[in-house]
Length: 189
Image (cartoon, rainbow, N blue to C red):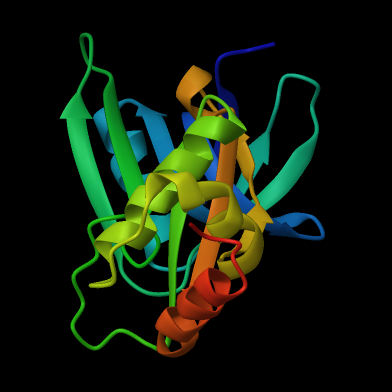
């Protein structure tokens, strides 16, 4: 297996070393997208992508899919690599931990990832715990995953930290009531 995907965008060819996306048919919606290539090609491809253009992505087995950006704000981070090669990482600001938007909706969401599902559940618990004033116990992690969180497995490509990627969401307005009901029913101790 190659360590990268080939990305064609508006006539430019770059490479992807990390990707988290949701698929609907043959089109993926990116939550995290890492491009590598020459500065000019990465700049052109990322500008096309951020402005709403589609990228054509191929893996080592020549499986091809279209990739678009996620809705909302996209944050981009650029780092110089070896020689004349740069890396640009684009993330959906609305789906990664650290979101501090005071006008948040009733349903909160985040993308969590890790090397295995146990680490993903731990990170989902930490994300949920940081978003509420109600104290949560780490021992409740599995119950929260099963009963409170709405989970969706995402496509992920990259290093060992990207083996499992999930979109999690929860309803903020009913959250405390659901926790108290779990305690009353003795699911949580």
